[in-house]
Length: 242
Length: 242
Image 1 (tube, rainbow over the protein chains, first blue to last red):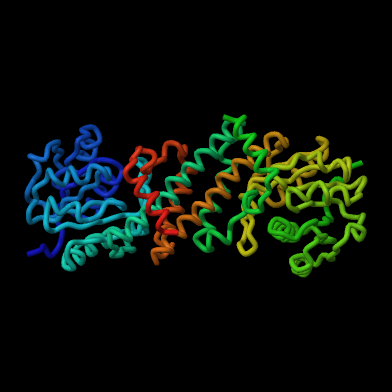
Image 2 (cartoon, each protein chain N blue to C red):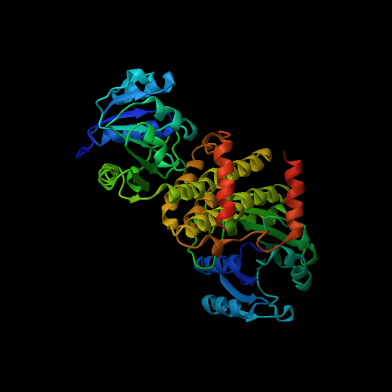
């Protein structure tokens, strides 16, 4: 019943993940036939770049793609899934935290392709190093999705929703919260008319080092050595440096 | 009155900074005549590696080095400075947060060489890319210390204590706190029997990206988009994943 390979895609969404993933799909020689999005500006841009038709309502969705990829905000996945009636087609989302089975409403053949990376509009993505995590409604589909993901990445792993959501949580700490600390660091030096360039080698080294050591073994700083005097001074400085 | 160049050093301390800095000094062709430390084990090791004599009391300190470097814990600097009576010699510390003038007690010729990097025992340091910040009790000495620091790094900048302490504070966020978040991330995946390797490409990309963009422009995640539902779920997961 299932396809033996994926050769046409409908991309649902036109944000960062949808855009980067669409470009990678095109580069892999697979046709995107439609971009379905509620955001005409970014969707038209993506439509131009991929040669895919832009549609803004579920009624216009083609019934003839082999894979429908929902790369939309986590809390929109279920709603969008309910709109699309693909029946016998394959439907996947790209979210770390949303269970695969919310897609049941769209199709009995559903799954997840979760690329664990941060995507922002204006930066090139080295897909082959991005870990991609696959889940599917059947072993047959899992195999098909793994095969598809291997077109982009050398690091493709099956992973159930229950585990994937923890991976996503770990990513929130490693990316979202870390980036917030970078922003605080940037703010501190900027307020002092010092260039953030001074801090960048430290940021790179801090990241690199954790790829070769346990983070706990690398911990240093006033908090680690319980240097209350400097911590209090730092809190005063933060209060004054707003 | 001041020396025209630095050719002999006494290193005070035998921790991470003292060890890495000592090796860089030796590699630059400058002699370390003594290592003074209260920690015989690491000091003997460093003494062996550098060919410097190990001394464990201030009374044994040579009076004949051109530069005395205090690479000790921030809250030990003042105490150690009071022990050493170098009089006409040059005394510097390597701390980001301690003012230069706490060294007055040791010598009228004092300063700071602050290398802004994280040093842990078992990792190679690429000195030429480490920003080094110089402060000195006189313009003449500043020139001498800049000249000395340029032996190690291509990025040497004069910076007063008042500014340097903010740079150190920014480094606490960019390294200490970031590394702590890496540790949390590691803990989350480990508890789920998932390899931390899955998260490493994200960590590297997150750091790289901030060297080319403003951190605030890169911010993503549930908190950024005020996705309360997933944030609450994450808090529950953290509570259960201890």
